Length: 391
Image: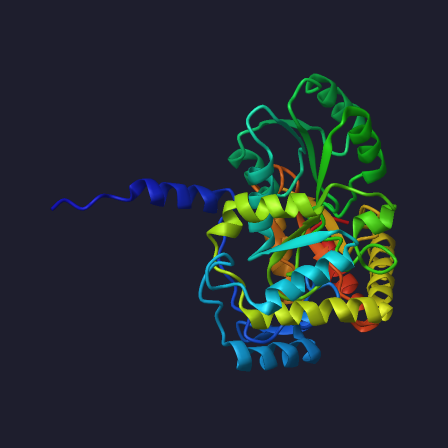
């Protein structure tokens, strides 16, 4: 029997290495915190989505442990077979109340939520209007749907209006956007999008992954921040909430339709009840302890100010995502490695995650970062920036 050759695989891997796009996994040897052990070295984490520091909160751990003792470590099936527990239903009610929506549906990840919602709702004869910098999961949801997708220029409301005019005869129109764009940290202009949606009779689907627990007076996300209503809010428990899973929240009919049509809900094994219980506890903490959000926002302002003072140009944003543009992929990788030598873990973000020539260090701030941590990050950026001629 002749074995197949894999020379084409080797060629692609070598090409990725030459272009500075080769990736490999890093091994973290301790729990999620501001500082962790990475391959035997203690490092300050400056790239985590654990925005409120809740992933290692003892209250969540205790709640999860208690439920694991009662329900075991696995859910044993999809939600529509043996995987639906009282905890899943409690979480759906909790997230709906938190988001001020009629109902919610829980998925096993935010990625699955985006793919499932869009592909289930947008049908043949419909048109999706998608921001060009939307997350990959939103893009994949558009691709899997039977609708025609029209991409509008990033947060360009004039272009969105033109596309809506072109799609005026569509059966249904869906405007799909991130609320916080994960690589730039900027916000979608939801009030303007809402105005256009009302004018052209379009539905709004918002991915609130990086806004939930971060934006708004109570951490409810972008709709609270902007004081607007949308048709469907999608999100994740894996960022500020600190656990795992995804959700969609909206009207009763929409959620009922998703339960019956979203393939990533129907065919995916349910989340383990322990993780679900921890998410409920986390939402309770976010609502009850405003100090976490206040600490996060104070740290965002501190780091932005310090980076600007030492010569880095960053985009002003109320979100924890602070991108520092370096440019070419290989130079960005070298910058990241130098940061590691300074004790800072902030991996290089390269194509295809971002466009060619726009590789960056994507800093993220946590509520658990101390003033000393913020100063340590700034000093490392100053040293590295000077040594590499970036500032």
